Image 1 (cartoon, rainbow, N blue to C red):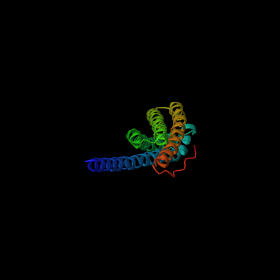
Image 2 (image 1 turned 90 degrees about the horizontal axis):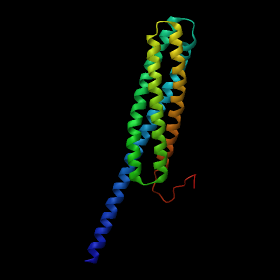
Image 3 (image 1 turned 60 degrees about the vertical axis):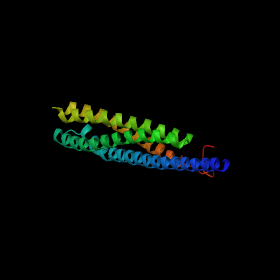
Length: 184
């Protein structure tokens, strides 16, 4: 009888261990996707900075409008990527708790927080770019584009911070006893 109980305990332990390992693999996949989407936002923000600069400061209304439309296209893609990252970061944050590693949980919370900030800055910048595109004169266009420029910079900084946190979360999700953490 004791032998059966011991075998059952070992079987439950093995199944639990396998489940936790599978949850950690799901977590690693999700946090890698967060990192990917945040890198995309950062790259899009960098790509549109030249067009935003021209639109915000050029003396030609025609040239400013053309560059505003370019910024609007790229900013729309950045907002979509940021939205995806927030959804995945939320899921990853939930799954990080299943892994049970404090470092992974902490870094995932940071990645999610920065992803939310990125999404909010990107959405606000996109609204300003849309207002600039609808502007009837150069002064109003440039006003909205300058606000958008500041927000785009904030979005890019938050996206970079999210990439960093996601990378640390992925790295720290290890149940190996020999895992060397730099913070310990």
